[in-house]
Length: 193
Image 1: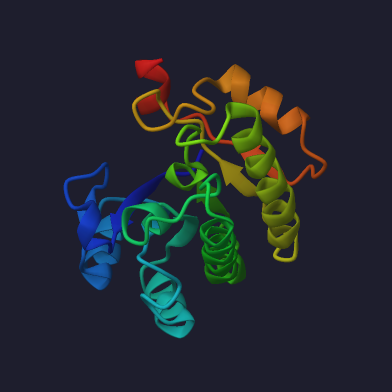
Image 2 (image 1 turned 30 degrees about the horizontal axis):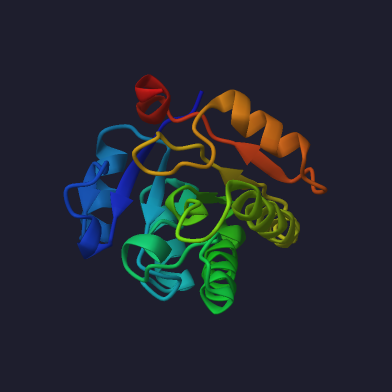
């Protein structure tokens, strides 16, 4: 089993579920010192660090990139795959696609959690799930270009009202056309449910 630790570069997420904050070089140095195999990066966008700088940091500290979070799309930019606004949904997919392109060259999948959004505000659960499925199909196939899956994370009921259990997540995966989306079982969320 390999171990990874989280690093957030998103100021708006300060106080969230991350171990290291802000200083990517120092966080990588400390992660390696503590014996971690990899880091999971929560960045404000794909331009937060250059590909060359990231590759050099990972190599210097003998770390892999386990995954990249996409939650900054929601936390920082208020983008959602189930927004009632079509333009917002398109921008949400574009943001996630750019994060797939950011992590993919390092063999890291992108994780969709908070950007899945929720239903309400004139959007039925069925409509929201249809939009979510369409986005997961599209983005899962985009991730395939890098030979990595897209990772989908069911969240607890306080963060979304769409998919809150692993069983519901598995059912969602079975309804997709792509086979390149995987469910992430986050024990924080599952313990609440």
